[in-house]
Image (cartoon, rainbow, N blue to C red; front, top):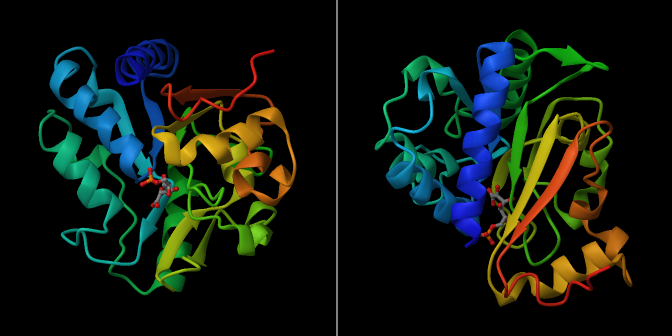
Length: 233
Ligand code: 6PG
């Protein structure tokens, strides 16, 4: 199944990258699909991954404290980090309770310091993305397409429906990654996933359509429902 396939791929990539670089830098997303994947990793891969060498960053964060239901860090902590043994220093959360503008700058500086910079942007080994029914990914929403082209590493974004502030990695940082894994589950995602992967209709209006790694690898992890409208070539 999707979660098992993803988890095994994740283990393999961790092994490969750690062998070469001594560590792996991964940026995580929030949302329902990552949560399913984290739960499988926590239970079945607790002792199968060298967590000491895994560094976690976040693709985006809602501007709330870590114990809020909305917190992406909080979700990851509850579903994965609490169960595995991983050093504190490997966990680099976006501080959602800080002033958003200042936090976007602090996080950009942290990335600059910690992650190898290539072509002027930090190069993550792996970025895990979810996708919204409106085609957003990370916290880059269809009405804020400029975040795809920003020269900054991180920016403040607004969830268009709720007005919630968020901090997000920008498109150029995401596209600079070595590997980008999109994940989606459920029939609610089938229309948007179908349009993006079949390159149909107004697909370019979706931020997720613009996620195309410059040199790296792009993979989609879909369950049957989410992949229902994808035409096989
Ligand atoms: C966030 C996420 C976001 C998410 C999608 C899908 O903070 O909201 O990082 O990009 O992955 O919105 O979320 P669902 O799977 O819950 O629809």
